[in-house]
Length: 483
Ligand SMILES: *Cc1c(COP(=O)(O)O)cnc(C)c1O
Image (cartoon, rainbow, N blue to C red; front, side, top):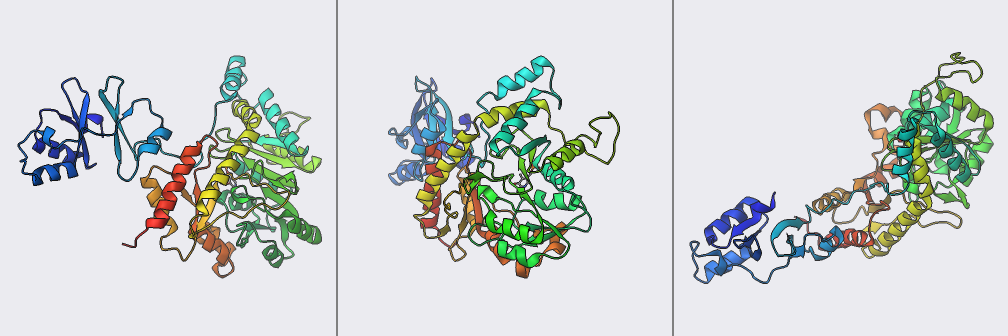
């Protein structure tokens, strides 16, 4: 809808104003004078009142128009527009300094607040430009090594390998540890499909475990019940930034001689027992997809406790080519390399990682503070001493006995320009994975999947935007009527 669709000439009749309203279906039209200056607004209600007073549809629109209208300057920010938009003021005309009608704003037409927009305003452009100026754009180059070094430093010296994405990071990790056909890997039922796909790529068999009702992460007691003589590894996933309770998992792995592969794709910057997640297992993986805590567009990282596994993975990442004899291959490897261009973005993102995590935690704090005011929600589990949730995506549950459903809330938010997303589907419900778990044993995963919703959590969100989102959610929860 263009602004001219809303425009009504000052000499127009009520009839032509009604035609404008009928066309836009927004319930409002803007009256302009010969110079295009906004002189008034006309709503359906204004016209009804004028006709009731005895005017006819052939009278000039001036008799019905409201001269006491709300307008904003063209340059008003979304945040300030949001402050004026309400259930009474749904469309706001935007005018130039001289009062000429230029544009309009509505809930639907402001910037959509997205779930996880990246922040690229640091050294990203400078470093990428450096790659191009120096001709180092492929997978050789200083930024790949620098990115790995920074990552390793943050993760207690675990050796780091940059790879093309978080899914191949998992695959490479599993293969480097020798996991393959005949092995079983225990993985939570509630996670992104990449976790289970990587297990399947190796030929190993995934075994789906139910999650804890409060942390929504893999339940250590369930792990213990699923162990068989073929179990080779446990893959805890730190979902939405919430660190898994690693201590019991480490004990179980120790007792049964199992490997631990941490899928930390969603938890860069999260701590457990005051140490970064990813440093509790034999290997851990991260993702730098566009919506993750730091991004390289596409990208991933694998970190290793064991030097030998790291060395093996470095060879596998590069086609399995011998490090000492070029173009000699002792095994079937992969091309899982990250480019210097992507790593350049990664280095710049790492420089601001703490800032991003702090921002996400502040945003989560605001959500918690506001959403606790409604009795219909279950908020994310609080932090244990020594733990830190990096809140990749702020996620909460709509109580099962609430009058409205999670999906209805998502639809309401979408209509208000707010993107949100449902929690992952339980893996066992989807066609490729049905044989790896039984619904009767995965009831918590099913319940959380049905009721969980993730809210915008980007570090570039402004406080007013978070408040606006909360205001909309609380409004919905308080005014919901079953229709
Ligand atoms: C994002 C993600 C991955 C990896 O995804 P890529 O898009 O391949 O980088 C793996 N596991 C989980 C839990 C994820 O959220």
